[in-house]
Image (cartoon, rainbow, N blue to C red):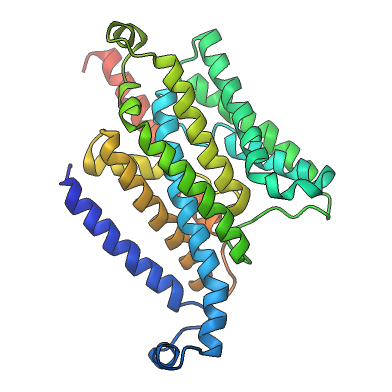
Length: 325
């Protein structure tokens, strides 16, 4: 069911504001109206100041990670022409974390360049997947299986590297500081601004090569450019926020269900929906139980069944076409 784009965006913006306020003021330590008023009246409140310093960087990281991963997922699905494509599934996230780990182990003085180095780690499995798809004409299912295989190999390597106690990778959104929020804010802003410039080209990736050639559209060139943008968004996000599986898979599907397949509408919706999804998952994880549940565990619990649903739905449609229904 499709809704008016303006109504969807307004509703999402209101929901985002509500989630931000809830995340800011509720948790293990709640903020009272008296503390807020005291902060406004006097300019400082010790408890509220501490809560802001603890929660605000975490909120910013969650918002940026959700927006980046969702847009990356939408673009990867367009580039690979596969509704199951996601940075966490095809090995992009794992590749980024492997490169970050190698830098932390062997060249710790390069810490400032970790977003760029993580991007290099994420682009390698993506380029390999594109090469194998072109070389062996992989169908969508086989392409995802290749991506999952690369994810498994890279994840195994990552577990081996992180067995070293000197390596500490981000796991969830706890203990984020202002430096983390500044780093991910910068890369997210750059990535999203570039992504917006290629929205029209992303729509045209739906054409096959013959159709694209007939209208003078260099589809291979723009597949590469848009894919690189998606990998940059996902890799730079994972480098700070850690792995956040299935966000880039679920959110684009929700956006398309609400506003259609036009990327001029899908991408803005992905930015808002992704930010809401990750921040809500993090807030629920740290507020619902006595022991904090990392946001990526909640996204996996929700995303796993959703992936199964998409696979079964695709298999059912394929069987229906073959039987002539």
